Amino acid sequence: MPQLCWKCGTSSETIPTLSPPRASPTNFSHLLDSNRVPLDEESLAIRRLVTTGQNGLRTLDAHIDSLQKSLSKLVRRRGAMEEYVRKHKSILSPVRRLPPELLCTIFLMTPPFIRRLKAKTVNQPPWRLGHVCRAWRQAALSLPLLWSSIHIADHPWTLPLRDVYPDAMLETQLQRSATQPLDITIESEGDLRLAGPLHLDSARWRTLSIRVVGLDSVDDLLSAAEGHLPLLETLDVIDAHVNSTQMPSTIFATAPNLRHVLLTNCRLQQHSPPLVIPWHQITHYRGRYPAQRQFDILRAAPALVQCGLCFVGPARLPGDQIVTVPALRRLHVRDDVFLNHLTAPQLEALFVEDFLTGAILPLIRRSACRLTKLVLLHCTVAAVPPLIQHLPSLAELHIRTYSPLGQTLQPLFYAMTLGPGRPAVCPNLTSFSFGLGGGINSSTGAVAPFIAMLQSRLDARLAFVRLYSETPLPKELARGIGVLADAGLDIAFLDWREAEKLIEGRRF
Image (cartoon, rainbow, N blue to C red):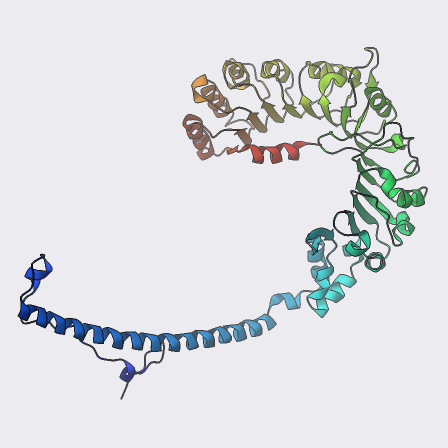
């Protein structure tokens, strides 16, 4: 009785029995191992061997082809069976038994749906959640909060607004959001004329983020909303074409809950538009205006907790002008010159883009504040040790310089080294990051002091260290970092791109 293969089911009768070519009675090794010419009788015997082998190869090829066809059929049958099992297993999936409340919680954690329309990417709310199944659609439609973020974008070189965000789509989303406060994002690089009833719901606006080339492109919408912004908490406006002679707009002058006003990007590079703001109630502010305008804003904003300041034109003011911001805790400035005109008794965190004049320590002394976070970019390293030795409360320190790594860095690392008989500089430091433009060179003598400084703080509070430069680490420094990591310190070397993300995370 023929036996079947346990893998493919092929009968043993279909497998040809072929023996390997038998050795010729004549030993041809002397010909295989040399270039000798065979004798006539040897040639005849060898031809017979070759003919027999070729016949066997053809037989085996035919059988292999037959087996491959059988195997293909079995693979297709297996795929169909696998799909059959998968579909029926999905019936038992736990996601089918998720209660609607938990499903809605998961929906709120999903990122906005990104819609591509004729090669254009449009960020929109999660419309596709309702396309998965009936239960998901019912859950999505029962959750007004899911529809409360509206993102409208218009780019004139691609599609008109009505194709990107039709009126019916906007109306549907507003209906599904019910009475939820709205988070509105508007992007325009042309003459945006918003359609639909969005302005009628300005009483529900909680966050308004506008990225435009000229605020006049959204003038219709904003003018209709003036005086009807009872819930507005955050205003984020970046106008890429600010007209300095433009009359200040009063659209946001009456917004009783407005607290956050962001009028430039996080790097303080864009000029801020002329807007009338109820500064007395603002707690978070970021803007770029002439120095005198910034001074007037701070004086009019006693509730300010966090702000970022940059200046159009010179940053200097008359020396007798000093403003006190009693509640300010976090400050970001491009230029430390303005710090000479500021008093902030509650200041805890300071981010300075260009540390050049040494105005930080006078600010600390004048304010009698307790600084816990300090970020210095483009700083003169020699000025750092005299500063940080007067900041015992400092817990987070970030330094970036473009100076060559050489003798100028050694005093900084020596000053920060803890040990018997040494002054305790920043004894409460828990986070330290250091960046160097131009690369790190182990031959300059600053690597060993850097490692020694970190080793001296292993038993202290320091728990997080990041080092970065434009060039790879020298071997000596890499070994030292490895030893410190083995000792339990959270330490890593970042490339320049990763470092930019680190800095962005420390901006206010």
